[in-house]
Image 1: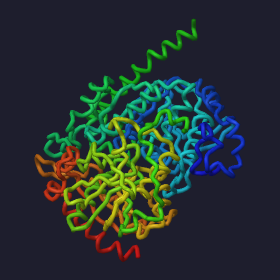
Image 2: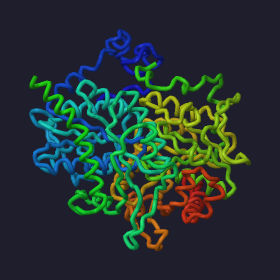
Image 3: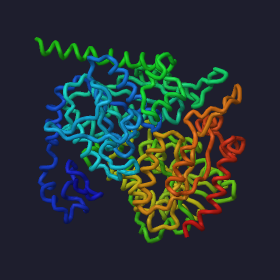
Image 4: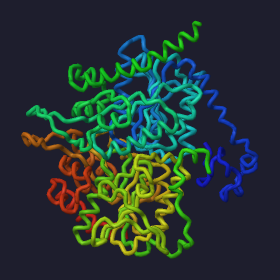
Length: 320
Length: 287
C-alpha cells in the first residue's frame, strides 16, 4: 500500500488537488478534476459481497478497555452455540488487535483461496478475521495512519471469503475516528442492523460513550442498545459486592433513560472472564452457571430479537 | 473542508495566530514525558493525572497536554471541565488547575461547546490540531510536561512524536494492566517506541489488585505480574505497580480536589515512588 502524504486533504475534499500539500503530488491533477470525489467503487463491491451476510452488528465504545473485544468474542461464542447459525467476527482494531488472543487463535495465519482471504475458524460455524493474523510476530506494531487503516478495513470487507453468514460482528477500536467512519461508509450500501455500545459504570466512561452515541446519530447508525460491563465485583472470599468502578452519575441506566436508548443488560465483573480471555477460551464453557454468563445470555437474546424482525421483513420482500 | 467536515464541529477550528514557531513555546520546558499504552482503559489518563500530582508534591511545575482528541478525560479528572482557553500574544494560555498556577492543562475538551459532542475527525485533522497543541500553547516555565495519549499506534502518536522530536529530553512512560491481553498490546507499543526512536523511561503496571473493603482480601482482578515480566522481556526499567483504589476512582470521577485526596489513597505511595524514580533517573537516562 502506498504512503499518503499526511497533510493530504483527502480525495473527497473540496480542497482536493488545491491544498498546499497537493503541490507536487502525482495525483494532483486527478484530484483537482473532482474524479476522486465520486463514491468509492468499493462500496458497491462490498454491497455485492455482503449479500450472503444476513445481519451486521458493530460493537462500539468511546472509551478503551471497557470490554468491547471481550463482549464481541462472547457474543460470537453465544450466537455460534446454535450449530445452524453461521457467525463471523471481524476485528478492525488495526493498532491493537486482541481478538486472536481472546479467541485462542494466536499465531494463526490467514490463507489465500480462489475467492479471497479465508477467515480462521474456531468452530465450523465461527470464523474470525483480524489484522493480528497478518503479523509475523506478536511484537509487530502496526504504525499506520488513517488512510492505510481504511485500506485494510476495505480489504477485510471486500476481499475476505465470508461465505453464507447469519451474523457478521465487527469489533472496533475506541474512539470516533478513521476506523469508525470507514466501516460505516463501506457498509453504507449493505445495511448495518445496528450498533451495540459497551460502557463501564463510571462517569469518565459514560462521558466518552455519550460522544459515541452522538457519533451514531450523526452517521445515522441505529443503536441496538447499551451494555454495562464490569458492573460490580463480588469478592470471591466474602461474596459481598463492591463497586470498583463507582456509578457516580447513575451509571448506564440513567444515561439510557436520558438519551432514550435501550439498556441491554449489565455484566458483573468476574475475574474469571479476564482469565478465560487470556487463555483464549469461552467463558460460557468455563463457567456455565456464573451470573456473568446468565447476564451475557440475556443480552445476546435481546440482540437476536432486535435483528429478527428485520430478517422477516427482508424475507417477506423476497417472497412477495 | 473535508467531506467529513460535515460531521465535525466548525467551532473547534483552531484560531490562526500571527506568531512564528521559532519563539518556541516549549523552550522553557525541562522534560517531556509521553504516557503511552497500546491498550485502551488501562489508566493512561489516571496515571498521567496522578504522576502530575506526585511531581507537583515534589515541588515541580508540571503541565499536562491531553492529545486524546476523541475521548479527553483529563479535564474531568482535574475538575477543570467547562473552563475556557484564552489567547495571549504567544498563543493559547493553558488552564491552571491550582491556585498557585503550578499545574497547567491543555485539552481538546476545553474547545468543545457541548461536552457530549463527538469529535469525528480523520487523521489529517487530528494531526493538525496536535501540531498546534505542541507549538501554540504558552506553557511558560515547566519542570515536566506530561503528554497523555489515546490508545494505539496511529495518527496521534506519530504526529506528537514528530512534533516533539526537536525538543529533548523526551521519554515514554508505558502503562499496562497485568492481563495477557493488555500486555500483548503494550508489546506492540514498545515496538512503536523502538521504531520511532523514543526512549522508554519505564513500564508502570496499573490496577494490580483490589482489596475488598468488606474483608480485606486482595483479589488480583486482572491477574498480576504482567508488567514486570514485560519490562524484563523488553529490557526496560519496571517502575512499579499501582493498586486499584475505588476511593481514588471515585475522587477522579467526581473531580474532588485531588491534591488533597490523593495522599490518602493506597495508590499514593506507589505513585510517589514512581515519581521519585522518574525524578532520579530521567535526567541521567535521557541525557
